[in-house]
Image (cartoon, rainbow, N blue to C red; front, side, top):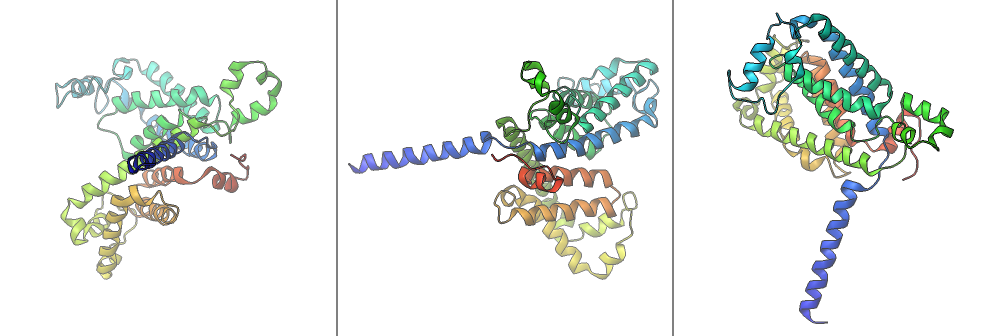
Length: 333
């Protein structure tokens, strides 16, 4: 064998190995247990946001809303600010009747509850995502990070069979075993809790999306002086708009510790994209995620946002661990 042939064979083997690892990363079948647990938490948070809107629905969506339909349309079509209508349309712009708004909202609440309990999840997951998009495009100016993260998670949950376990669908599937063997419709609507490639695709997309969020969040922080001089934590805890517990005494008494926490936070966000994948560093990265977002929930008054970000980080927990915690073992892959 000539040297050129050896080089060619080595390059071909390397390329085949690379392709094999790429395919395994994206398409190796995985169990749905972690996605199902995330579906429950996301459905609960979506239901909560819809119930909060119910407290004063017409003030958010009605003709006399804080931002009425015409103002929202102007924002999206470019009359006010840059044009975004091609990406931000909503049928809610055109609903004027309070009765229709309430009927629609009751339907949205029912869909969110169905997602929470895992009822017809193949249908309710994309339905909840679509309705949430319509609300997002209508409620410009009244949105919060919670709404954006919930929308992101719904987008990936609808790809996978996230209702195949820990759900009403799973209960019905066990009761209707005879029908499932005869009807392809029932098998699609009530999929078995088995390892599939779609579960892996949904998991990887959500994982990578989370990595991108942290990367750009960390880079944005690195542009600010307070994140370099370590005073960002002081300004965050002293901001009465968000403060839920007064911990300014800690920042004043232990400035070096606060400065260290600030720099750890920036380092964690910027390098999350690299450190969350290796098994050796992943537990530390996820523990920091719980600490950072738990601190945001407890001390900065953003309980729901902090909680949903902890839930999002759970996507890196292997399904076998999730099934062990919940108590329903996953099948051997």
